[in-house]
Amino acid sequence: MVGAGFAGMYMVHKLRSSGYTVQGFEAGDDVGGTWYWNRYPGARCDVESMEYSYQFDAELQQEWTWSERYAPQPEILSYLNHVADRFDLRQHFRFETRVLGAKYDESQDRWHVGTNDGQETTARFLIMATGCLSSTNTPDIAGLDSFAGDVLHTGRWPHDGVDLADKRVGIIGTGSSGVQTIPVLAEQSDHLTVFQRTAQYTIPARNRRLHQTEVEDVKADYPAFRAGNNAMPGAYGFPYVADDRFSAFDLTAEQQHEELERRWQVGGTTFMWAFSDAIIDPAANEIVAEFVRAKIGEVVHDSETAALLSPEHVIGCKRIVVDTNYFETFNRDNVALVDVGTTPITEITAAGVRVGDTVHDIDTLVFATGFDAMTGTVMRMDLQGRNGQRIQDSWAAGPRTYLGLAVPDFPNMFTISGPGSPSVLTNMVASIEQHVEWIFDCIVHMKDQGRTSIEATEDASDNWVLHVNSVADQTLFPSCNSWYLGANVPGKTRVFMPLLGFPPYVERCNAVAAAGYQGFKLSSV
Ligand code: NA7
Image (cartoon, rainbow, N blue to C red; front, top):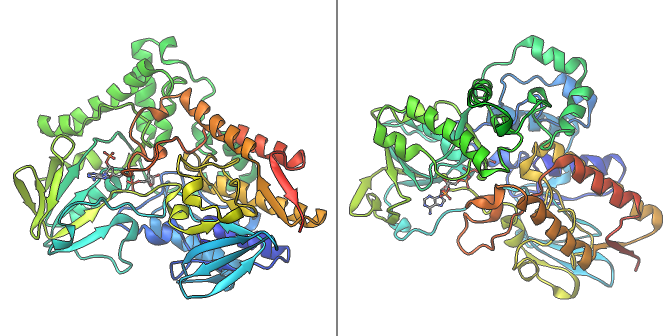
């Protein structure tokens, strides 16, 4: 079992509670996964805290109390530490231990797992709980090694924090991490230069402290709240559901504006649900996009800066971002915006970042340049399946999975929230729990049936990849350079990786299991 984030912790708990032997490996020195690494100032979840937590244990969800609408990173990490203590999970992990690779032995139906401490561990099953956003992406910019100051990445922020007072800070990247940290860095530093390649649509989070009564209301019937969320396309946002959603074109211009304004005031990613066709019909999408551009124009004083901050692409095709004071930050005297979309960064010098003929002097350079998402961590391992098949060859044309859970030629290996599953398009915790429980049931089934190997068939996997893409092709999601498509990493094959729609996916997984693991080959040595 690789990884001690939300997925690995629950998987270990589930297996251990039923008496299975599990060895977990974790590169970090404690639990937390994403929330262990991403400690940059301003890091916060964009799914509401009452939703973004485990639902497998009724007492656990009753005893923990979230303080804010959107939980900040330190609070989520405290929660995961609480869970680790409560279920005594740390004893099942080897921390500061990185899995370098694993090889499948067909004669025994076992994996041989190699770790960076030189040890080898054998196991019947290999479970990848490696997260979707765990391998950081740092662009290969000429001269980076020559930079005289500190270089940081939001996804590997120092645990002791960084003192930026009196520092001229430069930040590259305006995705979710950049948008969250820019307002805080602007406050903490002497001067902040933001290098923006693509402007970002971001929606106010309207974060606030949770009222005791709203927490109590949810806790009074948490199962109903969970069921409501699990029936949503992304397994979140139940309180903001509107089953009266209309096509933009069933509304007058005034009604469209009212609905957008109402959702803008609510804040958060559910803004995109204003119209049923917002992410399907380019004309409906443009109405939403234009509304946000107008908001940017209202907030940002300098018209040139406002224009640069106004995105042109389809809204929502890159993951929508939620913010606190993002656009307002560009009204500050100590913040400068540099467009590196039209004139790219040419090099990094000892003194700073060169864009065209200008070197922007900085003391600390922050990369908020994201991740080699969804496949990066697995692809960086030396994984060899049946007949020595390497994962890098298997996934050369894009990740090939069945249900996002299993890979042909890699028997007895499971990927929790793997590519081809809803994962990043959902509340990750809900998706993770569903995967963990499916994998657990599968392992129990194999034991009961005396089977020692399970493998996704080639046909089932090929059809699954076609299915994932055909669902995405009915929407505007594939229309821009997002990490959903791998477009943020130079040279990465472009293919839409997550599956849209949680409830039909869950139904499909359940049907596959009920039909005796349809699409899988089960065998015994
Ligand atoms: P993202 O969303 O991948 O954002 C990365 C940002 O870095 C984005 O603005 C990129 O611009 C920019 N980038 C990447 N490479 C470069 C280079 N070479 N030059 C300039 N700018 C660059 O990562 P995040 O960490 O913000 O968020 C990831 C997810 O975590 C997020 O969606 C949430 O789910 C949580 P681009 O848009 O590619 O032009």
